[in-house]
Length: 135
Image 1 (cartoon, rainbow, N blue to C red):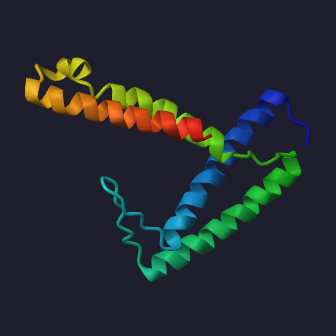
Image 2 (image 1 turned 90 degrees about the horizontal axis):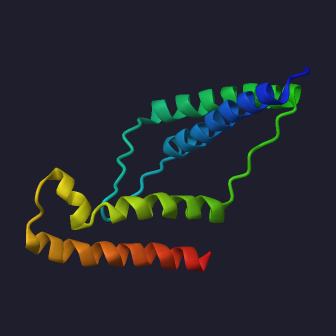
């Protein structure tokens, strides 16, 4: 099949996003349940649901494989360093927004909260910068 570059790019992007989402669903179906300090997952999938999900994902991947072969679509490669850098950039901005001067948009911030929260936000920002330095 002959496609224009813009068509191929649009199709590739959508199919790659679908495949990435399927990877996440597959992790859930395989029992993923992360627990951390402020982020916890509860995997409430039943065994029959897990099996059905894995079967459907396998069927969908067959279609993706056929489309990739027919259209000459190459896989997108997500590199850990790039993904982590991107997350740090996004999170840096969100953490800066935790500082009292930014929280004022919701109303006046009590001084004791500002005195406590601002240094903690700085520590989190420093942590992100150290993560970036690691890369």
